[in-house]
Image (tube, rainbow, N blue to C red):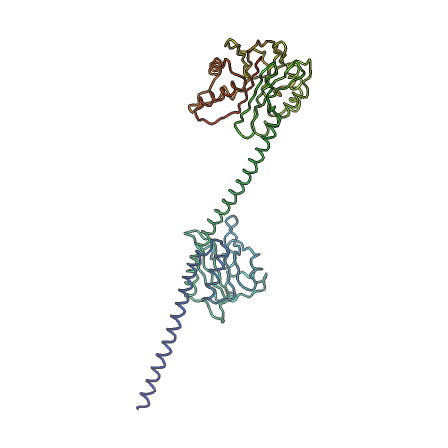
Length: 454
């Protein structure tokens, strides 16, 4: 009897020890799984790159759910095909080249239903597709597939294949993998946002680089443009005082001027405004100035010159045109011969302060139409008289209230310029215009030329 009690006691103790061991092993497994889930949540903050996040999460999950292979398949929003975003295992590189059709295989079924699925015998399951196995030669005995959900939207599926030791996947395995899939959705969303930020920054950097290159090119173009204009004014020994200024609204403008001596007794001058802005205007300006200088010769009148230049410019039907006024001044007599093409009215400020608008016969701007004819007008400068040419950047300058400077204000200003030199007149005019604008940005190019008979 004592032996029976002893055996029973030993059996109970042994059973208790075995039960305690099993409980301890179960607790250890639960602790490992909880630790793995905690590590996964921490890893979300370690990188924002999608591929790195997915690899970290999958490798951690495999440490507590030992399987032969694992993969993440994401839905292509355009085709609803499943794409192998990440594949761990011996055939990972081959698997990543395969795309599954909508609803194809266990993965397609889970992506369509949004419900997790355990298949412990793939051969007996009619939903199983062997296309991946045939392509790679990898035998799939059992698998566990769970959806990757972002709110109510299915992003793809997480799949583990062939539990090691020939064991079956359990409900506990499914719950663990579903918990792993939850931070994957967060990782995908964060990675998507990070990619958008990276793309935006890359686009910004590219735009900035293009902008800087264009600004550099515009500065070079502006320098080239200014090289076409005379930079030095005549000496005090000349019988005339001529001065001109160009102030572009941007790096490259469309206004232009020029003056030079044709011979000892004749001075040619011109001022114009190209209809466009920027580099196209600068190129047209350069061509126009080149033609004006190349075709001008002693004895040719301004009207004849503009007719010839217009024929050259209008021949190719350019998309721009230029208003212009030009003339020839005879130094010994003060005689002026002038012609214009759609330009602002010039003025003469007489030595006694009278202001006279010069009424030239109107013609079309240069390059506006072929076979246009330009006419000559004759007048004279007395000693102390001054000619004023300008572009509409002066009269159409606006203030903050969008009021224009206007020809009337210009007329009023010119009445205050008696006794000024040509350079002083231009400086005072620009100051008068800018004070009127009162801080409003310059919206158009400004060019002014003054010629005074000493």
